[in-house]
Amino acid sequence: MPDRSFLNWPFFEDRHRELAENLDAWCAKNLPVDHHDVDMACRELVAKLGRDGWLKPTAIDPDNPAPLDVRTLCITRETLARHDGLADFAFAMQGLGTGAISLFGTRDQQRWLERTRTGQAISAFALSEPRSGSDVANMEMTAVRDGDGYVLSGEKTWISNGGIADVYTVFARTGEAPGAKGISAFIVPAETKGLGIAERLEVIAPHPLARLAFDNVRVPASVLIGKPGDGFRIAMSVLDVFRSTVGAAALGFARRALDESVRRAAERKLFGAPMAELQMVQGHIADMALDVDAAALLVYRAAWTKDTGAERVTREAAMAKLFATDKAQEVIDKAVQLHGGDGVRKGYIIESLYREIRALRIYEGASDVQKVVIARQVMGAS
Image 1 (cartoon, rainbow, N blue to C red):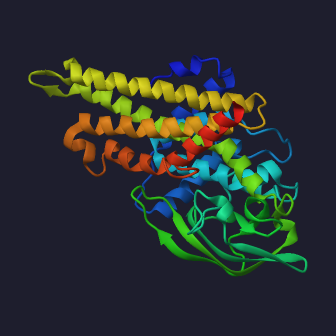
Image 2 (cartoon, one colour; image 1 turned 30 degrees about the vertical axis):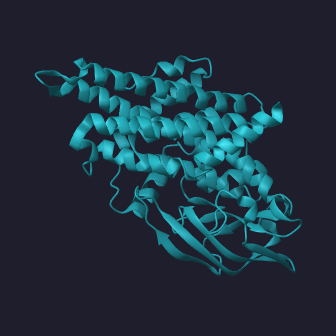
Image 3 (cartoon, rainbow, N blue to C red; image 1 turned 120 degrees about the vertical axis):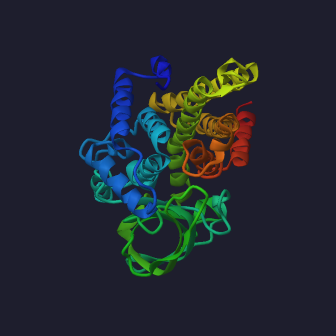
């Protein structure tokens, strides 16, 4: 039985505790899905999550707008990740892909949310480029004003849901000013002429990823999110909301690794006694439990701070993302060690967790970048 004591922390309300219990029961019945065809699996997961109402927190309700509840997003990602990494991915990308529309979109643009919140459309966030990953301000893709619209040209890469998304939030250079001040955000439906999948990308934990090519893609000015030049601010605001949730997903992976390790230590015998009686094993379990609880405190502090009215949680979110993802890697590595050969055996849960966790230390701001963000926040406040 996974530890639920953290739900009694003062960060949460009764509705969060009820959500965690109900979603955990749903996951036990519906997850994991078959991962052999990743595209099909993601489509199935989005449809199931939307059908049963779990995607509603990923975006605002256009008919009853209210701020996104980051604690709900974090609890959902942690729970899904503990059961199935691909389910967490499917949920998370619905939120990240439409985050700019939720936060800055017009009422007409937010019609997309009616489809993404019900699982009828899949969304994607197209920010990274071949030569500008962490350095967003170095973006090269252009959007040139042409009459009553824009023409987008360039490439995006490492785009989650690339190839299966119905709509992309795309960031491109419109040139109002140098660097970060000259970027804008656009809503680009997947069927738009000139938008193509240049390459499908395979990684150690299979997810739908792609490099996108924009060959003179013409879009109307009505798909511009916010004002020209607002793109960098929009992207950072979206990441400010969703970065904490990456830490929550890592926390879900770490909790599963800890649970599996406790079970292994109780059931496996070494030298005529359960592994759990070995002090070295007890030391590993203690370290894992400590890292899980410390990560949870940082993740839910960041989420609670945002939910209780903070305009920005750049420092808190960066700390949560950095610590939770790095420590989850360590927790899962200890779980591999405790499971021996089974820890690296393909198709076993610990081996799957080992592959899943690594990407979380890179996307939405690599660990080293988070250190820079934290340092700037600390020194700027001194």
